[in-house]
Image 1 (cartoon, rainbow, N blue to C red):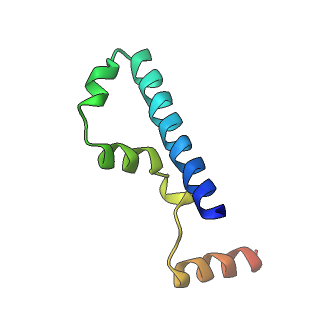
Image 2: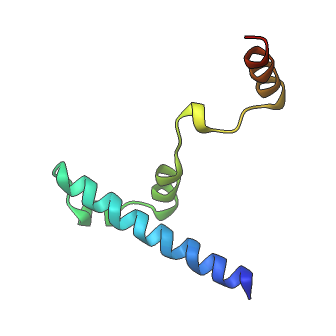
Length: 72
C-alpha cells in the first residue's frame, strides 16, 4: 500500500510540475496548447534536468573531490 501512495504522490507531483512549467512558459509567451503537443516523456525529462553540479558523480570523481576538500 505504501508503494501505491508513493506512486500517487509522484504522479501528483509530475502533474503539478507540468502545470508550473506551463505557467512559466505562459509568462514568456508560449501557449499551454503548444506544450500539450509535446511528448510527455521528453517533457518529464526536461522537468527532471539538473545542473551538472547537482547530478551524481562517478565514484572516482566524488572521492577525488572529497579528498581535495579534506586537504584544504
